Length: 245
Image (cartoon, rainbow, N blue to C red):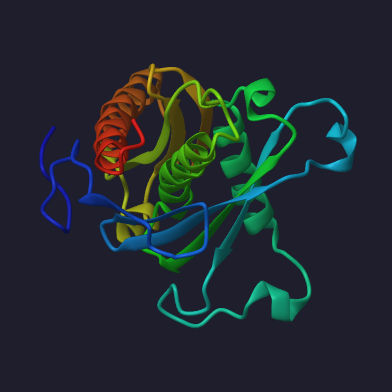
């Protein structure tokens, strides 16, 4: 693939990705993920209760909330709490994060408790939902490690890792990990959520300006598999450094 990107990356290159654990003091799991200029704070909180529809079943739950701070973008956006309602985009993304993390949890092993994941975008430059998923997984693992250390859990309920990445087609070239300037003019925009074992949890794809071919779909899928494999390794190394694996 030829180079065709404003930041000098090759088409198949991720932006620099890092995980800073223990970013906040009080959450059972806390991580700041940076993906290029996109920065998301992911906190995991453990609550000794479950939603009413799950009470008495002995099984746990994982859910998520997502928000973008007012100056995460070039211009200030009003807080949704000030507006008095959550927007459709926010609803969609936080439901996606919840689905992504629930896909790798054994609820029976978690017991009758909830892990709440709060993902707050501090700075947005494309790929906020995918960064939130990748960061939320690390925060979740940190929270589970805390429960194991306390003896609350006897066995980890996390059965696989999960990461997410964007791909797209810009000027007829399939690209991995789109920054905002690329995403805003993409012919096709796709998001992939993939487990460490290479299984797909969710694929979101839209033809923004033109339909895409099967070959282009395959190219974007292969880029996503490569990108998520690299993120899985970074997650593993981060958790290993935190003595979680």
